[in-house]
Amino acid sequence: MTEPVTTAVSLPTARPPGCPFDPPVESARFREHNSLIRMVFPDGHHGWLATGHSTVRAVLTDPRFSARPELMHSALADLGPLPPAPPGNFLNLDAPEHTRYRKLLTDRFTVRRMRRLTERMTRISGEYLDAMERAGGPADLMTSFAAPVPATMICELLGVPESDRDRFRQLIAGLVTTFNDPDMPVDRSFAAVEETQEYIRDLVAAKRARPAEDLLSDLAATDLSGSELTGVALLLLIGGFETTANTLGLGTFALLRHPEQLAALRAEPGLADRAVEELMRYLTVVHTTTRSALVDVELDGQVIAAGETVALSLQAANRDPAVFADPDRFDLRRNPARHLGFGHGIHHCLGRQLARIEIRTALPALISRFPELRLAVPADTITMRPDRLGVLGVQRLPVIW
Image 1 (spheres, rainbow, N blue to C red):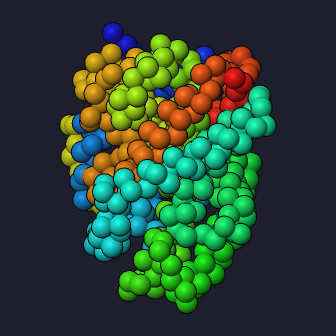
Image 2 (cartoon, one colour):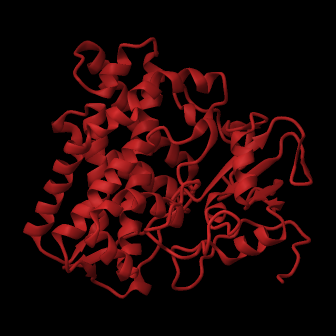
């Protein structure tokens, strides 16, 4: 038996030594005691921490909880009062505003439509693997493959001109870096957003003047305003790049640390689809999110008062033994159908089919091209990057083959 949790806790962040893929050990202790416990947020707010799978799912599907940032407190850093979501950023909106944007985009992210992108993804992966092979090892997998592959894919999807793509990728990288740097002033982070928005505004205007066969041109033909289109595009580029890039990098790291699983994926290409789902569960790259209660809500024998924020530990929920047998074991043959790696409820990741295509195409291509792929440095020297966005990743992943 573990010691009972009787006082408000802070969000656990320290991962077990030598186990960067495992959630903080306190998460399991908290979940065993009660899947919903009192938590003190970095800004001093007293809210809640949910760690159990059923509890996290319940909050994500309950319309009495809001995703609006101005109503919430950050679980990861003291960011001060947050502004409302800009137009088009439906990730941080509630129904019915969220529903309007979601309906416009759902038909453009169907499984069939996303599957048509597989050939394009195969070509993009192959081009970056060719460049790695020509340059020779060692190489940082993050900068040579894991980051540029999804960045290029989202460029093609949105219709970013070839001549702008280097600049566009730099804007994305700079945006992510400033938000994740704990020493970066918040106003500098928002300045990085504005710089990226300025480019997207110009791109939106160009698409409206000269439509092409891409997602942004498609959306420009709807009733969305220019500011809404800019917000939607910004959300899609961050969502379409950040999580996939880190899943590719961290997923490769996990496979190299589990050679028996790497051998299974290399020997059985049919495991690719299941491997994607297990990586989403095991890694839970988007590890924490938040919601705020709009009214008093009774849940798991507790009353969450209106205005209180609930931190949702997706990583702890994805390791819940009540749902997943031997949850800390990385097993590509597992059927992790109920994982929350793509979220749940009305904010269930819109681009999940695109992410699946990217990961199941790029990872097998990487390990097939380089059968001798291995870490170029000791595993315990691989450092995780700073994290203020709730997205797990490595700083660098030096590899050789």
